[in-house]
Length: 204
Image (cartoon, rainbow, N blue to C red; front, side, top):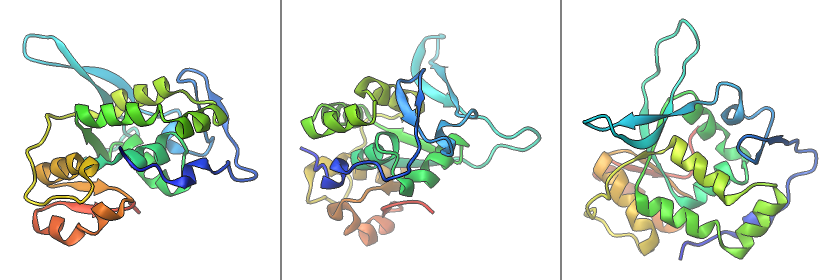
């Protein structure tokens, strides 16, 4: 079972302003670029033969500019909660990078299943009620933003927390960055660099 930090029981900071995002049924900060008017809209990717496969974000860029290089990134479940449930200010650069297309969030179906399970934990349900958000809306944003990948093969390194292994496996397979605040992941940073991947707590 994924560890859910006690910080998720904290109340919104005094003076923090939020308004209802009626379409998604969740709150947004008026200054948060992720929830701004340029937030990427979803589109259906087509598989050979014309069948729709999965929701992917239609990334937009300022008029007259070329698209920025898009890097893949893996987010563990607690980072997802920080970013899209609790709007932790430290995740603002992440939300901005996803919104403007500089980062491409990749995940697997088991990662979605873990998020769905965690959103049902009593302590998380209470926070969703407090912030006037719904688990369904959070999962909808996951489905809209995420580029789904097949489950990655086991990486040459093993995490002490079995729940974190799937995130490490995908980051190593794609030779990309994994965002996590879990000590069991961060203590593997040097070993992951040797495999072409990275583990860090945030992006600047």
